[in-house]
Length: 260
Image 1 (cartoon, rainbow, N blue to C red):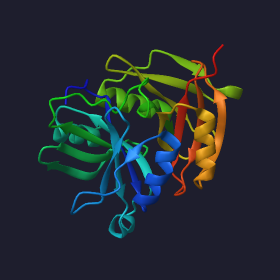
Image 2 (tube, helix red, strand yellow):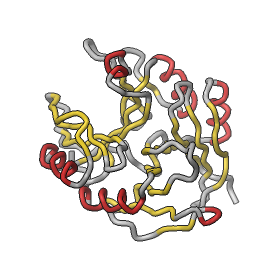
Image 3 (cartoon, rainbow, N blue to C red):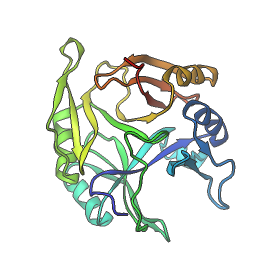
């Protein structure tokens, strides 16, 4: 893929019930998740109307017995998966699944940062750029947010491995640390923040763009999910919610704010 090194190129939902996830997310975000999967593996593409944002992979009993849980993950693009995996280990992270290749798709590995937060690294075979992360395109990922137990260590890790920088920040409410913006490639891709309470889940959280935040919030509730936060306005004028799907997976939705 031709995306800049160290930028997000794919999003993946690990779900014990892909059919139920399809019904839920299609309603909340206007996606069109495949009703069927290719033979041999339950993996369903997520279409936005303007390209794919990712896929839904079934959480099998075997995966669950190995410690896997329902969650959203993302893929960070790299040039050399094997070398990056070795560098991750040297930097205090871990390789959770050694590198493997899928013909016509690419080479990838599942890794974790020093705080144990998982993600993929990947070198795609396609000559075309991924558009899974696009802050303005409907249905695509708008923002990548890391909630971590050790923000300085995490920031240093991702800077070392992927060349990220952190030129701007803002103080969180009540002075509970800084919301530190991530610059990768040619722009901002998200932010890191320290855990705000003992019950706040650690990990990467992804915000996907939808047309109407109130409609998305209603669809979350109607579909058996829970709205944890919002709708409320964020500094750039957009409005967001943070929610869980029926399997308890946390995700975010962002939509344009009301006209002035």
